[in-house]
Amino acid sequence: MELMRNSQETLLTIVEVLLYDPLFDWTMNPLKALYLQQRLEDETELHSTQNADDQECKRNFSEMDQSFNKVAERVLMRLQEKLKGVEEGTVLSVGGQVNLLLQQAMDPKNLSRLFPGWKAWV
Image (cartoon, rainbow, N blue to C red; front, side, top):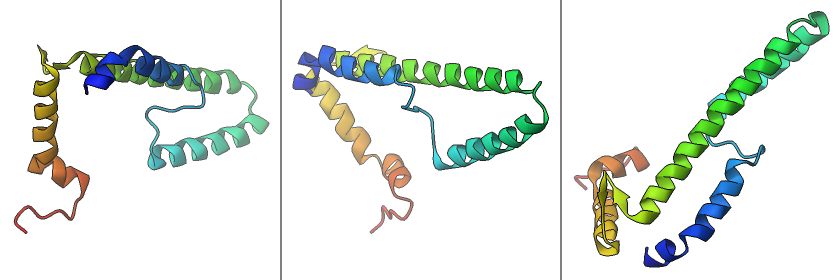
């Protein structure tokens, strides 16, 4: 954690490159990818029959890109906070932050989200 804090400028630069990379999607999941693919196919079919809807489609994709960038910016801001040791509004020392992370890692609620078949009683 101390090494990451000392190298935070380098880490943030790497993440910031991804923020502006149009090929990197911050909020994509398989379900959303399938939906977008089907929507794109439907819009392609409509494009051959209706040329007027083309501008509306471009506008919709532009709005989606802007919302993705907002998510990416929030992720970058949260990463900056973590690298400065800010957790839940409190600035922690390196040791305090590591202890908090260990507690969160051992929390049964977090473990059950990680693996649905996890059984705390075993």
